[in-house]
Image 1 (tube, rainbow over the protein chains, first blue to last red):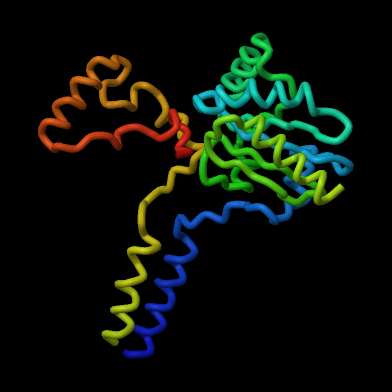
Image 2: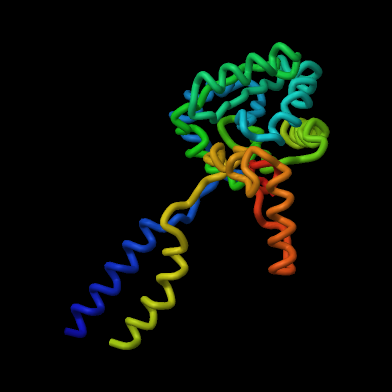
Length: 165
Length: 72
């Protein structure tokens, strides 16, 4: 009887752990798997700034124009900006992107993650989520709304170029 | 026997915190104006908040931080 109870306890404990809502968010220093890297079309020869956003996210609307301006200044041979729209409706995502583009607030490539498979891999703890990736490894991250996100990214990139030329 | 039951009872609440966990990127529905106390009419929300504040002597906690992003 005692042995059965012990085994039952262990089984329930294991089931609880396996079904628990504990998230495994990717953090600075973590590597990106090849499948996700391919889905993001990550460049191998330059730093990638990957920004996750959505139509319903007000903070994303504030940050995207700043990131686009930064892309105008820094995007090119050394840095590539990649957007990931996590809206589950492609029509909503495309309409949002067209609205931003027409206003001059979006000028980099965007991947529509309608099945939310890419964002589920990163599991950011807040939104918007921005990652700086070099050689398929996360070297910087800004999770949640950040005032002056453009300056924050620029500082990260400068530091990165100094430490890892 | 009681030792195992005690361990199980202590550990269960840690893992069984919710039936479903809404991730930050899944808050599109929660960010809609209809999910706020006043629905699509903000004035009703203000009135509702005033009643809530008067009855409970507390306020806040009815919205999603950072404009629906769950970021702050």
